[in-house]
Length: 284
Image (cartoon, rainbow, N blue to C red; front, side, top):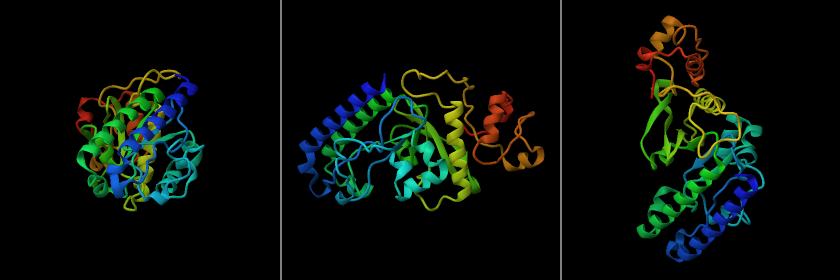
Protein backbone atom coordinates (compact mmCIF):
# COMPACT_ATOMS: atom_id res chain seq x y z
CA UNK A 1 0.00 0.00 0.00
CA UNK A 2 1.34 3.42 -0.93
CA UNK A 3 0.06 6.84 0.09
CA UNK A 4 -1.67 7.48 -3.24
CA UNK A 5 -3.75 4.31 -2.92
CA UNK A 6 -4.51 5.11 0.73
CA UNK A 7 -5.67 8.64 -0.08
CA UNK A 8 -7.93 7.32 -2.86
CA UNK A 9 -9.44 4.77 -0.48
CA UNK A 10 -10.04 7.40 2.22
CA UNK A 11 -11.69 9.74 -0.30
CA UNK A 12 -14.01 6.88 -1.19
CA UNK A 13 -14.85 6.44 2.50
CA UNK A 14 -15.74 10.14 2.72
CA UNK A 15 -18.02 9.75 -0.31
CA UNK A 16 -19.72 6.70 1.20
CA UNK A 17 -20.12 8.46 4.54
CA UNK A 18 -21.83 11.37 2.81
CA UNK A 19 -24.13 8.90 1.11
CA UNK A 20 -25.26 7.15 4.31
CA UNK A 21 -25.48 10.49 6.12
CA UNK A 22 -27.84 11.92 3.52
CA UNK A 23 -29.89 8.73 3.64
CA UNK A 24 -30.49 8.93 7.39
CA UNK A 25 -30.13 12.59 8.32
CA UNK A 26 -33.89 13.18 8.35
CA UNK A 27 -34.26 10.43 10.97
CA UNK A 28 -31.53 12.08 13.03
CA UNK A 29 -33.79 15.13 13.38
CA UNK A 30 -32.40 17.66 15.85
CA UNK A 31 -29.36 15.38 16.24
CA UNK A 32 -28.28 16.02 12.66
CA UNK A 33 -24.94 17.64 13.52
CA UNK A 34 -22.79 16.49 10.62
CA UNK A 35 -19.74 14.26 10.87
CA UNK A 36 -15.96 14.29 11.10
CA UNK A 37 -13.72 11.35 10.20
CA UNK A 38 -10.02 12.24 10.17
CA UNK A 39 -8.10 14.90 12.11
CA UNK A 40 -5.33 15.16 9.54
CA UNK A 41 -3.91 13.56 6.40
CA UNK A 42 -3.91 9.76 6.35
CA UNK A 43 -0.53 8.12 5.79
CA UNK A 44 0.98 4.65 5.65
CA UNK A 45 2.71 3.43 8.85
CA UNK A 46 2.17 6.53 11.04
CA UNK A 47 3.91 6.58 14.44
CA UNK A 48 0.55 6.52 16.16
CA UNK A 49 -3.08 6.24 15.20
CA UNK A 50 -5.18 7.98 17.83
CA UNK A 51 -8.81 6.84 17.89
CA UNK A 52 -11.35 9.02 19.67
CA UNK A 53 -14.96 8.14 20.41
CA UNK A 54 -16.86 10.61 18.24
CA UNK A 55 -16.74 14.32 17.41
CA UNK A 56 -18.39 16.46 20.06
CA UNK A 57 -19.92 19.90 19.86
CA UNK A 58 -22.59 21.59 17.78
CA UNK A 59 -23.22 22.00 14.07
CA UNK A 60 -21.57 25.42 14.42
CA UNK A 61 -18.31 23.62 15.28
CA UNK A 62 -18.18 22.04 11.85
CA UNK A 63 -15.42 23.39 9.61
CA UNK A 64 -15.81 24.14 5.90
CA UNK A 65 -15.32 21.07 3.71
CA UNK A 66 -15.11 18.80 6.78
CA UNK A 67 -17.60 16.33 5.32
CA UNK A 68 -15.59 15.96 2.13
CA UNK A 69 -11.94 15.82 3.16
CA UNK A 70 -9.47 15.97 6.04
CA UNK A 71 -7.40 18.90 7.39
CA UNK A 72 -4.10 19.61 5.64
CA UNK A 73 -2.18 19.09 8.92
CA UNK A 74 -2.86 16.94 11.97
CA UNK A 75 -5.08 19.05 14.20
CA UNK A 76 -3.65 17.49 17.36
CA UNK A 77 -0.45 19.35 16.45
CA UNK A 78 -2.01 22.65 15.39
CA UNK A 79 -5.31 23.33 17.17
CA UNK A 80 -5.93 25.09 20.51
CA UNK A 81 -8.89 23.12 21.89
CA UNK A 82 -8.27 21.39 25.21
CA UNK A 83 -7.46 17.90 23.94
CA UNK A 84 -5.04 19.21 21.31
CA UNK A 85 -3.26 21.49 23.81
CA UNK A 86 -2.89 18.64 26.29
CA UNK A 87 -1.52 16.32 23.64
CA UNK A 88 0.95 18.96 22.45
CA UNK A 89 2.25 19.38 25.99
CA UNK A 90 2.63 15.60 26.35
CA UNK A 91 4.10 14.60 22.97
CA UNK A 92 5.20 17.80 21.26
CA UNK A 93 3.70 19.27 18.11
CA UNK A 94 6.45 17.91 15.85
CA UNK A 95 5.77 14.31 16.87
CA UNK A 96 2.00 14.73 16.58
CA UNK A 97 2.36 16.19 13.08
CA UNK A 98 3.37 12.71 11.89
CA UNK A 99 0.49 10.96 13.66
CA UNK A 100 -3.06 10.35 12.48
CA UNK A 101 -6.30 10.91 14.38
CA UNK A 102 -9.69 9.39 13.57
CA UNK A 103 -13.06 8.87 15.22
CA UNK A 104 -14.57 5.47 15.99
CA UNK A 105 -18.00 7.01 15.39
CA UNK A 106 -17.88 9.66 12.67
CA UNK A 107 -21.20 11.33 13.53
CA UNK A 108 -21.14 14.36 15.79
CA UNK A 109 -22.98 14.45 19.11
CA UNK A 110 -22.52 16.77 22.10
CA UNK A 111 -22.49 13.80 24.50
CA UNK A 112 -23.33 10.09 24.73
CA UNK A 113 -26.80 10.82 26.08
CA UNK A 114 -27.67 12.79 22.96
CA UNK A 115 -26.31 10.07 20.67
CA UNK A 116 -28.20 7.36 22.56
CA UNK A 117 -31.40 9.29 21.87
CA UNK A 118 -31.01 8.60 18.14
CA UNK A 119 -33.52 5.89 17.05
CA UNK A 120 -31.83 2.55 17.88
CA UNK A 121 -32.16 1.11 14.38
CA UNK A 122 -30.54 4.20 12.83
CA UNK A 123 -27.85 4.33 15.51
CA UNK A 124 -26.96 0.68 14.96
CA UNK A 125 -26.72 1.11 11.19
CA UNK A 126 -24.48 4.18 11.49
CA UNK A 127 -22.23 2.64 14.16
CA UNK A 128 -21.79 -0.55 12.15
CA UNK A 129 -20.94 1.50 9.05
CA UNK A 130 -18.31 3.49 10.98
CA UNK A 131 -16.76 0.34 12.47
CA UNK A 132 -16.40 -1.23 9.02
CA UNK A 133 -14.86 1.89 7.46
CA UNK A 134 -12.53 2.40 10.42
CA UNK A 135 -11.34 -1.20 10.09
CA UNK A 136 -10.60 -0.55 6.42
CA UNK A 137 -8.55 2.55 7.23
CA UNK A 138 -6.56 0.80 9.96
CA UNK A 139 -5.75 -2.07 7.65
CA UNK A 140 -4.59 0.29 4.90
CA UNK A 141 -2.59 2.62 7.17
CA UNK A 142 -0.95 -0.15 9.22
CA UNK A 143 -0.01 2.18 12.11
CA UNK A 144 2.93 1.31 14.33
CA UNK A 145 0.73 1.73 17.38
CA UNK A 146 -2.97 2.28 18.06
CA UNK A 147 -3.97 4.41 21.05
CA UNK A 148 -7.60 5.03 21.89
CA UNK A 149 -8.43 8.25 23.70
CA UNK A 150 -10.50 7.13 26.67
CA UNK A 151 -11.10 3.63 28.02
CA UNK A 152 -14.67 3.51 26.71
CA UNK A 153 -13.50 3.50 23.08
CA UNK A 154 -11.39 0.36 23.50
CA UNK A 155 -13.94 -1.33 25.74
CA UNK A 156 -16.59 -1.09 23.02
CA UNK A 157 -14.56 -3.52 20.96
CA UNK A 158 -13.70 -6.10 23.61
CA UNK A 159 -12.13 -6.70 27.01
CA UNK A 160 -9.04 -4.86 28.19
CA UNK A 161 -6.61 -5.10 31.09
CA UNK A 162 -4.75 -2.45 33.12
CA UNK A 163 -1.17 -1.92 31.98
CA UNK A 164 -0.17 1.31 33.75
CA UNK A 165 -0.95 2.66 37.21
CA UNK A 166 -0.47 6.12 38.64
CA UNK A 167 -0.88 7.69 42.03
CA UNK A 168 -2.94 5.66 44.51
CA UNK A 169 -2.99 2.76 42.00
CA UNK A 170 -5.29 4.63 39.63
CA UNK A 171 -5.41 2.92 36.24
CA UNK A 172 -3.89 5.22 33.62
CA UNK A 173 -3.73 2.89 30.63
CA UNK A 174 -5.28 -0.37 29.49
CA UNK A 175 -4.32 -2.89 26.82
CA UNK A 176 -6.58 -4.95 24.58
CA UNK A 177 -7.64 -5.20 20.97
CA UNK A 178 -9.39 -2.83 18.63
CA UNK A 179 -11.12 -5.36 16.46
CA UNK A 180 -8.30 -7.68 15.37
CA UNK A 181 -5.55 -5.13 16.06
CA UNK A 182 -3.67 -4.89 19.38
CA UNK A 183 -4.19 -1.48 20.97
CA UNK A 184 -3.77 0.47 24.17
CA UNK A 185 -6.05 3.07 25.69
CA UNK A 186 -5.38 5.98 28.00
CA UNK A 187 -7.56 8.02 30.28
CA UNK A 188 -9.25 10.70 28.21
CA UNK A 189 -6.50 13.25 27.75
CA UNK A 190 -8.77 16.29 27.93
CA UNK A 191 -9.65 15.46 31.54
CA UNK A 192 -8.52 18.09 34.02
CA UNK A 193 -8.33 15.39 36.69
CA UNK A 194 -5.10 13.92 35.28
CA UNK A 195 -2.09 15.26 37.17
CA UNK A 196 1.17 16.27 35.54
CA UNK A 197 3.08 13.20 36.72
CA UNK A 198 0.39 10.90 35.38
CA UNK A 199 0.40 12.69 32.04
CA UNK A 200 4.17 12.23 31.84
CA UNK A 201 3.70 8.53 32.67
CA UNK A 202 1.13 8.06 29.91
CA UNK A 203 3.25 9.93 27.35
CA UNK A 204 6.44 8.04 28.23
CA UNK A 205 4.72 4.68 27.99
CA UNK A 206 3.09 5.43 24.64
CA UNK A 207 6.39 6.70 23.21
CA UNK A 208 8.22 3.62 24.49
CA UNK A 209 5.62 1.35 22.92
CA UNK A 210 5.97 3.16 19.62
CA UNK A 211 9.75 2.84 19.66
CA UNK A 212 10.06 -0.72 20.89
CA UNK A 213 6.98 -2.37 19.51
CA UNK A 214 5.71 -4.11 22.64
CA UNK A 215 2.30 -4.03 20.96
CA UNK A 216 2.66 -5.46 17.41
CA UNK A 217 2.13 -3.14 14.48
CA UNK A 218 -1.40 -3.19 13.15
CA UNK A 219 -2.50 -4.40 9.76
CA UNK A 220 -0.07 -5.63 7.18
CA UNK A 221 3.70 -5.60 7.33
CA UNK A 222 5.47 -2.33 7.94
CA UNK A 223 7.95 -1.03 5.38
CA UNK A 224 10.42 -0.51 8.22
CA UNK A 225 12.88 -2.99 9.67
CA UNK A 226 10.97 -5.45 11.89
CA UNK A 227 11.18 -4.64 15.57
CA UNK A 228 12.52 -7.07 18.13
CA UNK A 229 9.82 -9.44 19.40
CA UNK A 230 9.01 -9.31 23.08
CA UNK A 231 7.88 -12.27 25.21
CA UNK A 232 4.12 -12.65 25.84
CA UNK A 233 2.74 -10.55 28.71
CA UNK A 234 5.81 -8.33 28.63
CA UNK A 235 3.84 -5.09 28.46
CA UNK A 236 3.95 -4.21 32.10
CA UNK A 237 4.04 -1.76 34.96
CA UNK A 238 6.29 -1.40 37.94
CA UNK A 239 6.56 -3.72 40.88
CA UNK A 240 4.95 -2.69 44.15
CA UNK A 241 6.51 0.25 45.94
CA UNK A 242 7.78 -1.80 48.89
CA UNK A 243 9.90 -4.02 46.65
CA UNK A 244 11.18 -1.06 44.72
CA UNK A 245 12.25 0.68 47.91
CA UNK A 246 14.07 -2.43 49.03
CA UNK A 247 15.89 -3.25 45.80
CA UNK A 248 15.89 -0.02 43.80
CA UNK A 249 15.34 -1.99 40.63
CA UNK A 250 13.01 -4.44 39.00
CA UNK A 251 15.23 -7.48 38.76
CA UNK A 252 18.86 -8.24 38.08
CA UNK A 253 20.83 -5.35 36.64
CA UNK A 254 17.92 -3.60 34.90
CA UNK A 255 17.68 -0.24 36.68
CA UNK A 256 14.29 1.31 37.20
CA UNK A 257 14.53 4.97 36.25
CA UNK A 258 11.02 5.87 37.27
CA UNK A 259 8.12 4.25 39.07
CA UNK A 260 5.92 5.83 36.44
CA UNK A 261 5.77 5.73 32.68
CA UNK A 262 6.87 2.12 32.37
CA UNK A 263 10.41 3.16 31.34
CA UNK A 264 12.23 1.03 33.88
CA UNK A 265 10.06 -2.01 33.23
CA UNK A 266 10.50 -1.73 29.49
CA UNK A 267 14.28 -1.72 29.94
CA UNK A 268 14.01 -4.80 32.12
CA UNK A 269 11.91 -6.50 29.46
CA UNK A 270 14.43 -5.64 26.77
CA UNK A 271 17.21 -7.02 28.94
CA UNK A 272 15.30 -10.29 29.27
CA UNK A 273 15.55 -10.11 33.04
CA UNK A 274 11.91 -10.51 34.02
CA UNK A 275 11.27 -14.04 35.22
CA UNK A 276 8.14 -16.00 36.23
CA UNK A 277 8.27 -14.80 39.82
CA UNK A 278 8.43 -11.17 38.73
CA UNK A 279 5.53 -11.43 36.30
CA UNK A 280 3.26 -12.19 39.23
CA UNK A 281 3.80 -8.60 40.34
CA UNK A 282 3.40 -7.12 36.89
CA UNK A 283 0.19 -6.10 35.25
CA UNK A 284 -0.89 -8.06 32.13
